Image (cartoon, rainbow, N blue to C red; front, side, top):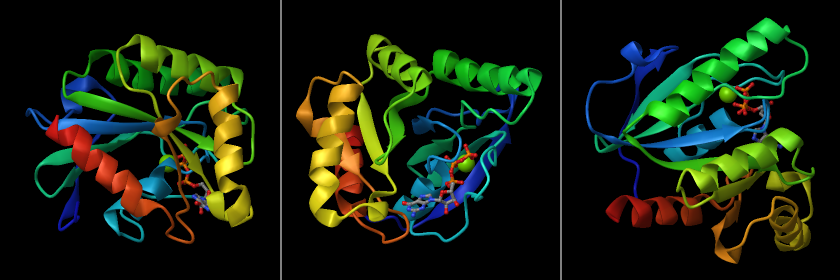
Length: 195
Ligand SMILES: Nc1nc2c(ncn2[C@@H]2O[C@H](COP(=O)(O)OP(=O)(O)OP(=O)(O)O)[C@@H](O)[C@H]2O)c(=O)[nH]1
Ligand SMILES: [Mg+2]
C-alpha cells in the first residue's frame, strides 16, 4: 500500500462524535506511552499528524485519521497510566470500551506491546477480549530500535508466548524512530482490507 493522503477526520469522546459513514477502521490499542500515535505517524509517513509525547497519557480522545479516502486509522487513549486519578482512568476506559464494543466500522484491532517488556495483566485481558470478539489478534512489538537487530525475532517470539498467542505470523516488530518494518505492516493492512 502507498499512503498518498492522510488527514484528521474527527476527534471524539462519545459515539455521537464518531464519523458518520461506513469506512473500515483499524484501531490501535495498548498501554500509555507504548507508541500508538507514533506508529500511526510512521505508517502514514507523517511527522506529527498524531500528537505524541515523552510522558504517558498524551492521547485522551479518540482520533480518527482518514487514509487515502478509503479507510481510517483510529488512535485511542492508552490504558494503565498510574499517574492520573482513578476517575480519569475510568473515564478513558469508558471511552475506549464504548468504541471497541459498539463501533460497527471496526475491522481490526492491533495490540501494541513494548518489545522490551512483558505484557501486563491489562495487556493480556485486552488480547483475550480481541480474540474473543472475533478479531485476528495482530500484535505490534514497538520500539524495536531499542534492542539489537539480531534479537528482534527472539523477543517477538517471547512476547508471543507470554501473551498466549497461537499463530506465529501475526506479530510484527516496529520502530518509529528508525522507520523499520513499516512495509510489512502496510502490506498486511492491504491484505486485510481486501478481504
Ligand atoms: N525509541 C523509540 N521510541 C518510540 C517509538 N515509538 C514511540 N516512541 C516514543 O515513546 C513515547 C510515547 O509515544 P506515543 O506515540 O506518544 O505513545 P502512545 O502509545 O500514543 O501514548 P498515549 O497517547 O499516552 O497513550 C514518545 O516519546 C515516542 O517518541 C519507537 O519505535 N522507538
Ligand atoms: Mg497517543
